[in-house]
Length: 355
Ligand code: KG4
Ligand code: ZN
Image 1 (cartoon, rainbow, N blue to C red):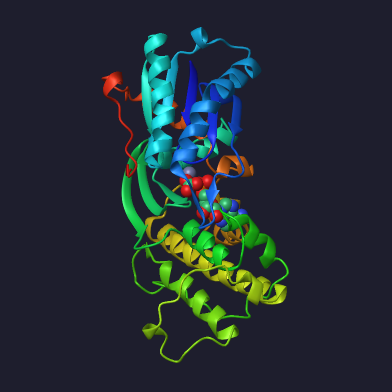
Image 2 (image 1 turned 180 degrees about the vertical axis):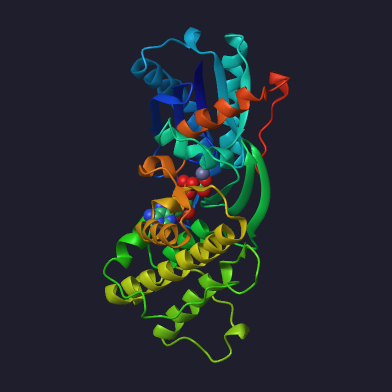
């Protein structure tokens, strides 16, 4: 079966075509200047871009896979979570195609896409259950116990910021663009990860809950200390997350990036390891942009060795961050379970869709 999938959850216009689990083609277009100075995507601009790009990107994937729209058996689209206006554009296009070609439509949860992204990298990979699934992206830090395909028990989450979001917020203070994960990783290479002792919040909470906003605030206070602005009653002063890069040396930026990265990644790793020990899953799978991080990958290898449980995630960076290939892969399992959109005309985006 041939699946054409669309993801417009944020600022990338992504389309893929899969034959069962094999990705035949994937294309992703985005404009560089879609971000506001304050480190976020401008939703209106994103929507305009998707409307402009969707048709040409669809044509490109069709061309690459040597198919016509008439050859497609199923259309799949991200329903949420994501930016409402951005999601709308992809959903409108998917509805139009499903109705025009009279084919079933699948509304996919973007985070389920991330969880299945390992299969977009390796179509022969097999899930073994129970599995632990971790999502680490710009909006999510969640842990699930999977007893079967598409059966999720939510066992861990963040109380405030997602881990990727904390990279982006710290990145803003250090003068990096948005998203900042990659730049922080780059800066951290020449920094000392032991220079600043940033907290690992919630580490002893005895559950699978995370919190990253305290870590971000600790970085902010450290910067203020370096600038000599820190007063001894910091709670009386509300600091803003402004770009402080002009006031910091490149050595200070590198040390902050390295120490922050170490604290953030260790926080995630610590609880993942605990959950593996408690639940003894057959495998663990991970998806989301933060999986691109090399320190994270190295630490995963360590816990694989320590626990004897294999941990899987897509190796190519484009499959870690947002893409439509993972939406086609997840759709394959929705199809197996007959999870189709019943009334295509009524399908709506759900910006806060949960698993
Ligand atoms: O999965 P994703 O592309 O989008 C969402 O669904 O949110 O994840 C984006 C997040 C951003 O917060 C970005 O800073 C982070 O992934 N990220 C990284 C790296 N590359 C992307 N975080 C740490 N290290 C990286 N190399
Ligand atoms: Zn994503």
